[in-house]
Every structure is written in C-alpha cells, then in structure tokens.
Length: 77
Image 1 (cartoon, rainbow, N blue to C red):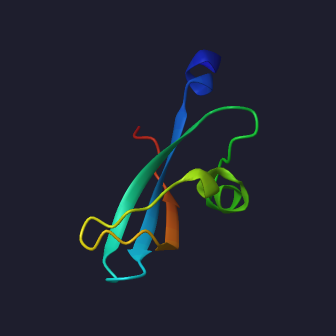
Image 2: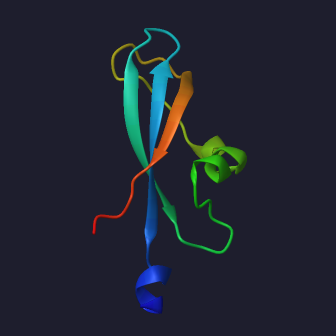
C-alpha cells in the first residue's frame, strides 16, 4: 500500500481564459508526489509551480491567460 501511495501523481485542472479573445481553456497539470508538492488547490495556488507554466491561445496566439479556477481530479475507485 505504501508503494502505491508514493507513486501517486496529483492531477489538477486549470481553468484559463485568454486575455485577448476571452476563449476559455481547460488544462490538466500533473504534479509529482514529492515531499513539498502541493496536495490541494490552495497549496497549488500558493506554490511556485504555476509560475513555470506557459500559456498560448490556440485561436489568437495570445500569450496572456488569466487563471480563474483550479480543481483537483480525484482518483477513480
């Protein structure tokens, strides 16, 4: 059981809106299960992990996206 828990990857869905054309996107982000990895939405928002992500709108090629929601995918039973 401990081995399964250590390999778990946390998946968060980022809800992003392009600042130029206002199109909304859903982007899945995998966070590896390491010691200081965020475990919920609040920890993800406070961590520096999101700062390393880049955005590019597929419609207008805008590079500024506004994050308006985050949700964590729960493991399927």
